Structures are given as structure tokens and as C-alpha cells.
Length: 363
Ligand SMILES: [Zn+2]
Image 1 (cartoon, rainbow, N blue to C red):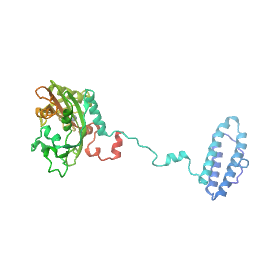
Image 2 (spheres, rainbow, N blue to C red; image 1 turned 90 degrees about the vertical axis):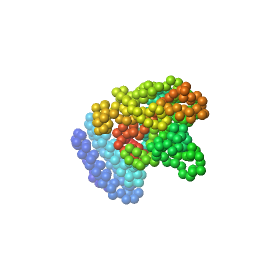
Image 3 (cartoon, rainbow, N blue to C red; image 1 turned 60 degrees about the horizontal axis):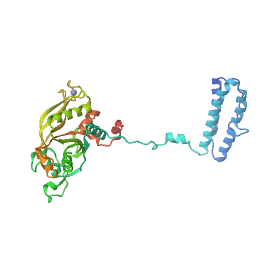
Image 4 (cartoon, helix red, strand yellow; image 1 turned 45 degrees about the vertical axis):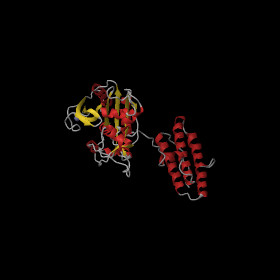
């Protein structure tokens, strides 16, 4: 233990105080470094913190009392700091371990991660909300579907070549069932159009967000799992103009009011006529850039007027879907494609890899 006498202080400026207290701290640390056993720890405690002969008591008695009034505050601060150091040294020597606050700062596993919306979920919700504001409700249906709902009632009859455009994952061991009852993983959210019409007479306005599956090889833009949002509007006197106006409004709501749309003839089995919709490039404003392959336009969704064949299937359960009395339109878009554009993601697989470094960017 330090035997050096506590000197008398003659100067009380900051530098002199720092030097004096620094020397004491070095002594205390030197003493604490050599402690072995309970008896030695008790000797250290008495030597530094003892009420009568402890060195801190002596410092207090000599320095604090001798200090001029204007130096007492600076001296008191340093005295308290030194006392805290000595007490900590004593705790550590006695095996008390670090304080609670030191523990909280150092221990791993105490940080709680709060959840956040996955970028696909967020995009799904954004699209759904645009149509909810137009009076659409949300339709849901099973991901394991029958051949009838996924294909037949959507005007893909058995053997129709359009089935080949959707490479389908089927449930094994159902060869004995009639084809329309065989189970598969839905390749699009369109079956929910029919399920909804069978449950309610017209008018209908729904959006159908959901997961779909195709036996596609993985590359930068293809995944065996992806998401669609489909929409269906059925009422009296619904025309192609309603379809154009609705989608033009929706694209402006999603991508900004400067976005333009244009429609091209296309083919889908369940709509007639059908169209592909392009929006003006959201990256270059239509001037032409790498993302739009210099065309100024990006193809984003498919749509069309509901084919009378589809209404005929619905009319088997709801006679109100008489194609002579009602009409409607349907549209569909890929959610990953929109999310990739919005967030600048180049590989679709990143959405499903579960890599926290990727996902944390969207918190
Ligand atoms: Zn562009």
C-alpha cells in the first residue's frame, strides 16, 4: 500500500489540481493491482476509504479545507471522481463485477429488433390502398387451387395452348380424379375472380393481392414464388374507357402524377379485348435511359374486358352475371417487378433470401 504522505497543496488552479488528483489515482490503481485475498481487499478499503485514517478522508480534511472559496467546486468535482474510481477498484477486487450500467452497455443480446414491413408486403399494401380509395374491397382465396378455378373457368380449356405459358406445379398422385378437380399451386390470382363472383351477385369491385407459384427457373427477374395484384370490376355499362381511366389514375397514384399510360393490343384467355399497359419511364420521365432500354416506356401490367365465357361460368351459380346485361374489366400486375423498380432492386431472389442486411435497408 502507498505510504507516501498526502502533501499540502499550495496551488489550486485547474492544472495543479489535475496533477495532484492524478497522482493519487495512480497510487490507488497501483495498490489495487496487487490485491490477493479478502484480507488484502479489506486493507485496501481501510487504507483509502477508512473514515478516520483513510487517505481520501485525509485529502478531504487537508485540501478541501485549505482551498480558497473559488477553488472548492473544482476540487470537490475531482475528489468525487477519485472516490468513484477507488470504489470501483474495490468492487472489482472484491469480485462484485461491473456495475449494471456497464453490463447493459457491454452484453450482447440485449438489443431488441422490432419488426418492419417486408418490401413486398409494403408494395402490396400500397397498391391495395390505391384501389381501396376507389371503392374496391380485397378478395382472398386458396393458394392450392383446383384445375377448374385456376384454368378452366378462366377460359383455359383442357389442352389449350395458353396453359403452356404458365408452367404449373401440380400436386402429385391425383391421376384418378377428373381433371377439373386436380389440385395445383395457383399460377395467378385470377381464380379469386371466379370465387368472388360465385359468392356475390354484381356489382363487384375487388382487388386480389396474393402469392402465386410457377415452375420457373430462377434468374434475376424470375422466381418460383412471386406476388400479383389483380382487379375485377363488374357492373352495368362498364366500358374500356372505364378501364383506361381507372388504370391511368392508379398508375399516377402509385408513381406520381406526371406518369403517362398507353395501351397496346394483347392476348389473355379471360379478357377480350386484352391490352398491355405501359407507363412512361419513372427514371427518365420518358426521355429514354438504360432502365427503359431508351424507349421512354416501361411495360407494367395486363388488362382487358372480361370475356363473356368467364361470365357464363359465374352465371352457373349467380344468374346475375348475364353477359348480355353486365360487363366488366380485369387487370393484373406483378408486385415484385413494381417493388424492384420502386426500390432499385436488381435481383428478385433478394426478396426471399431472408438476408437481414438486405431487409434492414427497408426498416
Ligand atoms: Zn427511362
